[in-house]
Image (cartoon, rainbow, N blue to C red; front, side, top):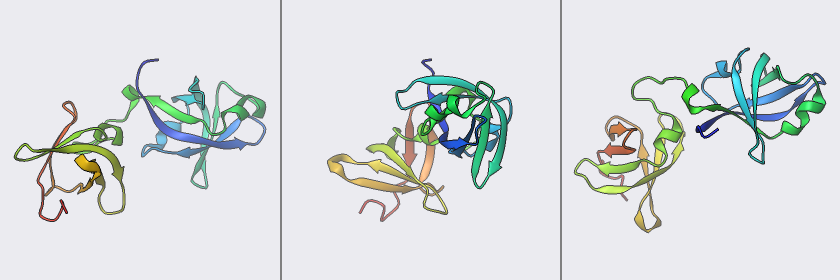
Length: 171
């Protein structure tokens, strides 16, 4: 499998003796865990195990999921701490102006007059709007609020973000 994989959850623990697993969701699309959906378990050695959701229910912010491939606790215990992933091609389409974090991280940030500032290294979600962390030369960082006044154009294909450098951003 050379296709890029995207994490949608983490296996926290087993549940009961019939092979169910407690999953911490890491996705805005909980329907990923609906019956019949295909996922890939990636363990700490990076071994990939394709699975199909047989049953799923929400319990205290966790999903209790049973995969069709397993029917008892002994078969699934080894997956504790593993990640659940999907192939990138199976991502949900987003609305215009919305982006997955992995699409933004690594993008080159350029001012409206063409000055290259650096690359986005992280996405923060402090509240009202996301903040993109840009690594600048000399080890400094720029925190870019993701608002219309600052983010002018995002070109995912070219991995470039054009911004308006508002007064006070470059302190």
